[in-house]
Length: 424
Image 1 (cartoon, rainbow, N blue to C red):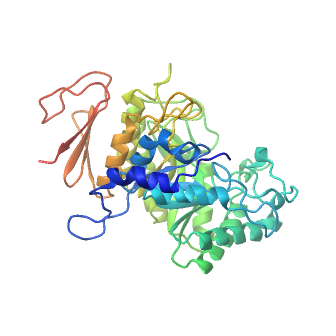
Image 2: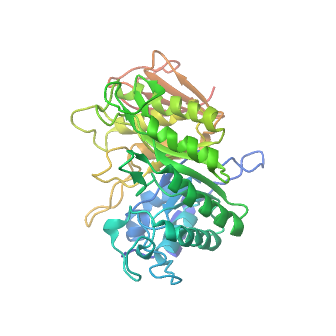
């Protein structure tokens, strides 16, 4: 990877932005950890000259937020290209970005070196990134995970594997949850041995949804937004019954169905994140993490990243998840790209332009600074206005395509507009 070294430069650039900011509350009690954050992927703020990404780094640093990085891939090179031969250069650099921007670090233990999955030592075939290690190498991957956990003592949170990549049993037409749980337990034990303080979660399964007529594996978990695939819930049940331990439950999902897209209005469909979060909390009894969440946009032309609409939709999804008791939500890829239509925080720098902030950036940093699992969420009137009521401020969101005057306000709020006001 050709990345600019940003450590000292970013510290200087952020000094003014961080003046007066502190992770300690006005009472002197350490502030609670943020409930929202981001997952860095292939390209992020450390891939460009520091002067081009000032907007991005100051946004990340304005208030501590969760910042997740994968062990291998999605911005990190192969950490162990040959058995016992390590290369932490790129992962060190990404961790340094997280440190410099005051992030709460998360490490997703996913991506196995080639020699663990039938390839040759010393080579990396990135087209096989989503291939799981062979069973004979589960222990080797667990050892690599433990080595990473020991190397980065600042990381408390570890997500194990990702979307059960490489672990679908085509013959049985289901996830190989036995294999996943086997490797999960080995990783859990290895990480806890070197880092008893580490918090480890799984199974990081995709909660696919289908229309009522479109699924061959329906579950009892459903709503106007669709029906959750029972095969995903089977993963959670098996893992929950056979895991050696877990500190949180990890899932991802979309508010649109796989076969029919949206089955209700885009904003109403975000209720999926609340309904599912509530169900999982009762079913498993662990804090629920959305490692990825994708509020689906209406059909037709996609909203542009510069539009306030995808930002409003993302905030609505967070609000619904919090209403359902979700503990954490990670925004996939904070830097905008054509392959991810959901809202991002900043634009991709080019030869002719620096990173520029997108509409979600202000709301996202506000959520990181002000929201916890006890925050009041209010929809009125008739689901057209969302209010997220924090201790000192209120974030008001217009959930409609037209201008309106929110209750208690005198000025109109534009379509999909957001407004932060003091709490009365």
